[in-house]
Amino acid sequence: LFGLTTSVLAQGQHVKGVWMANKFPLSAAINARPERFTIEELVANAEELLREQGGSAAREAIQVKQVAFYIERRLVDPPALDGTEPFFMRRHLLQLMAVQILRGFNLQLDEIGELVREVDDKNLKLLVDE
Image 1 (spheres, rainbow, N blue to C red):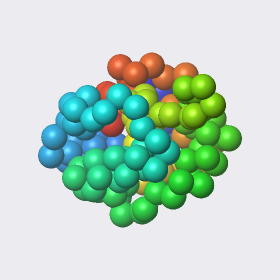
Image 2 (image 1 turned 120 degrees about the vertical axis):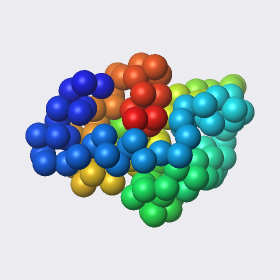
Image 3 (image 1 turned 180 degrees about the vertical axis):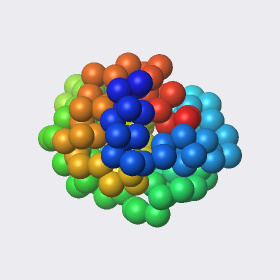
Image 4 (image 1 turned 30 degrees about the vertical axis):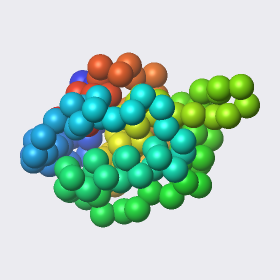
């Protein structure tokens, strides 16, 4: 996470001023969501939470095919399987929201991937809450 702040600040972006404008901690709202989602529910929940938060991440609608692209680019983990049915969990929601927030800083997807890939849930929560 500290590399995230350094990387974004090195590009002349003021991260804290934007993220600290959140009206409530998103991680608390995420914890109140169901534990499992279809891809459509994942998108709807991410959009709703980002809209409540405000900021540039809320302006752009998220498409289901966009999530599939993020999975392919390893920005979001692949879904878990229940038999043959894929499902998404709160970690996926955190990842999707982190990607959308970071896109608001005009970072390239490769840069975002370096920031969110392999980050644990605790640090993803910090990222979306800052």
